[in-house]
Image 1 (tube, rainbow, N blue to C red):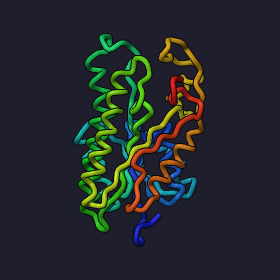
Image 2 (image 1 turned 180 degrees about the vertical axis):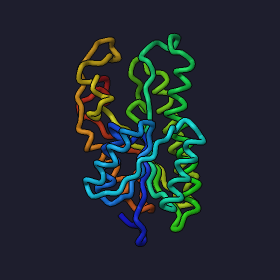
Image 3 (image 1 turned 60 degrees about the horizontal axis):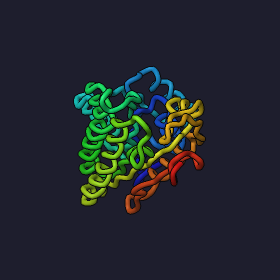
Image 4 (image 1 turned 60 degrees about the vertical axis):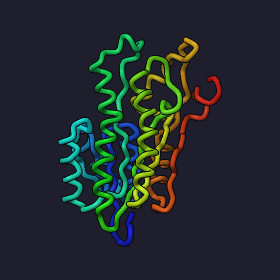
Length: 254
């Protein structure tokens, strides 16, 4: 994938497994130089090997998105190696314990907020600074918002609060990026078949107090959706997209 003869560069956070892995491989398969960020170096190296087997180029770059110095080092690596960044997929995230709010430890609350919100802020801040100064300038930022950006699951106060906040961050970056040809959109994903969603197939708590098995969809549909968003020209933007298992509890009352 090129822009005016330049090979495009994409950064995927949380790239070692699940949605991040699937999206990174799809981007690599379609010609992007993909930087794989995450905390688990061995998992990132394995995904990089998969990308190369598909004929793509990938760089494993261990990073803790909650740490400002670690994020700064990641972007310095990108700047030194490629000189630019065209797509950032802010995908890294974590859940909190499924307990009532009064039972959620403050340290766990902060860990979820640091990962799901502050981590996105740190990566977006660094990407914004690079994108507005590179030549050609501009780029695309895609945030993983989740169905929880719209509707909570029971006992998910920290995760839901951060995902609602991502929607506000997406809108603000979309507005502030206009003058620099930086676009920002959000993809809200529901029940993609990954390690994180395995519990859905076993049964999870519902709003009415029941435990129910929920339908899942192939994670490759998410990868295709992210690729579609990434490949648009900067004159067009998917501001918000919801992709979900068709029969999961979301639309209506269940």
